[in-house]
Length: 148
Image (cartoon, rainbow, N blue to C red):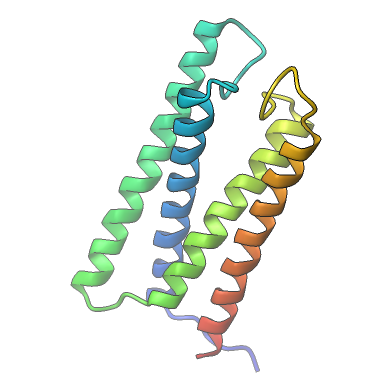
């Protein structure tokens, strides 16, 4: 018999997933775009267009983070926060973001690569293996939370 998932558990998952997306986007933007200068969100145009695309990407990450924190505050205020569901959502959200970025944006759409002018195979493997590990850890926590 399927286990019913409460609205509070769904909201905890959503809050965690949005924060996972926001944090993963923030780390990607800060480390790879700004500090290391390895790529922009969109590298098929001018450097100026790349900077604008980075700004849009950063804004998306920020909106996801703020929305997640508002949801989290509401859950905490109502004493409805479900820790395991939230952590599962956070890890799954970060892993899903990274896997989407590494497969769809890097390989299918070729909006950018992790690095240029080097053999990107080890970077691709590391990027996607970490993504799958985060996603698997998140899904595992979500399944455990659902059984409780």
